[in-house]
Length: 59
Image 1 (cartoon, rainbow, N blue to C red):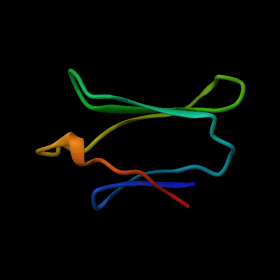
Image 2: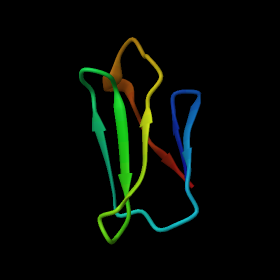
Image 3: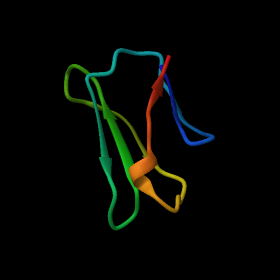
Image 4: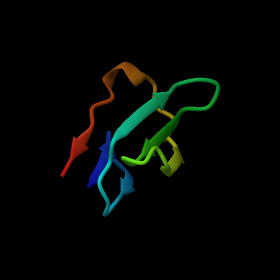
């Protein structure tokens, strides 16, 4: 899975993903976990002017 937000590649994960959550404040974070509810990745997001425009591209 490749996760891209705006023009930034956020994550590249080679295992099954169960869920993704976006935490906008205080620092924008993205948490990704697997089917056993173990965290795969927590990543800081790039600072964007408007987070309403976020779209996920999963491939």
